[in-house]
Image: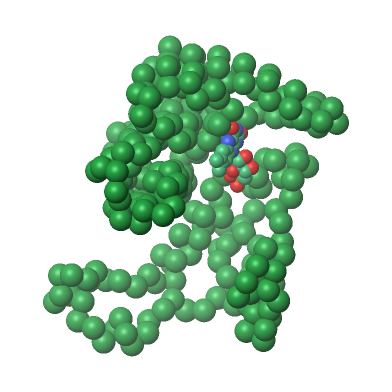
Length: 267
Ligand SMILES: Cc1cc2nc3c(=O)[nH]c(=O)nc-3n(C[C@H](O)[C@H](O)[C@H](O)COP(=O)(O)O)c2cc1C
């Protein structure tokens, strides 16, 4: 597959700052801090080829060492005040998954009624979960009171712990892609039903219910894009300079040009 990284493809950074410092001798720093071009491209490939997987799961078991790497990657996400507010409920039980799937069906039927009539039939026909087809489901939660009420960095924006748990989700999702595992996030669930099915206490917030497994294929594009639901928005339309709706100066225009030259992600 062709590389999904930026064009023109600059060599990986080998600047003097890193090169001149004797990293190997100073245990405070990473001895080998720079990514080479192949490593960089591999990271971008994981990012651009990650998909939300629903209908392509295979029942094949996930080796423990693979699942261990993926969970370890999730646990190494950034978190506000190093709070690590997450827990991971690994669900293999068919009975538990069947309960959650039954709740999905109920929530999905309710959700259908929330869309305009014109979109309802399209919504109904979208495959939006792989709870039973995937061999492992993982619920990532957030313990909002972990390490006490005052957390460095969460003193003024209270949701930072929840955002941290979402960082764990993204780490897991990208690591899974690098392991050739698909992940599908299922959010069409009643939170209380999810709590009950998994025995999650009241003070713990379920953040993400993820279906994980090997797949027949990874879709080239987001399925909602392919189904004509929504398109990927042009990045330049989402850029603001120095303030909301601020216009680009010369440096901003150069950045917009560079974005235009950036190769589309691998399809
Ligand atoms: C917070 C969140 C919740 C989501 N919930 C669902 C869901 O309930 N069912 C589903 O099929 N996809 C769900 N998705 C996946 C999105 O539909 C998907 O990420 C988006 O369409 C882009 O596709 P891609 O992930 O394949 O690039 C969710 C994604 C996020 C980030």
